[in-house]
Length: 65
Image (cartoon, rainbow, N blue to C red; front, side, top):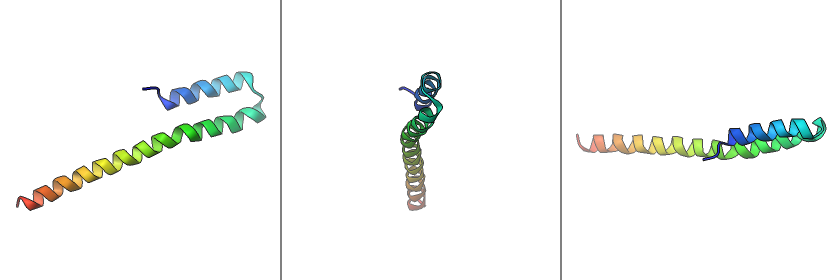
């Protein structure tokens, strides 16, 4: 799996070398936002999946009492 942070780092360093500052900043921000969004969504999904597993385990434990 390709890391979004690695892609962001590569793009940032490339833009710093080849693009004027006025162009590179908005592009870097857009790329970081774009790459940060999937990580944010996967983090939420992972949290909710873990929470649902915990709730399921607690429900089973209560039902077995």
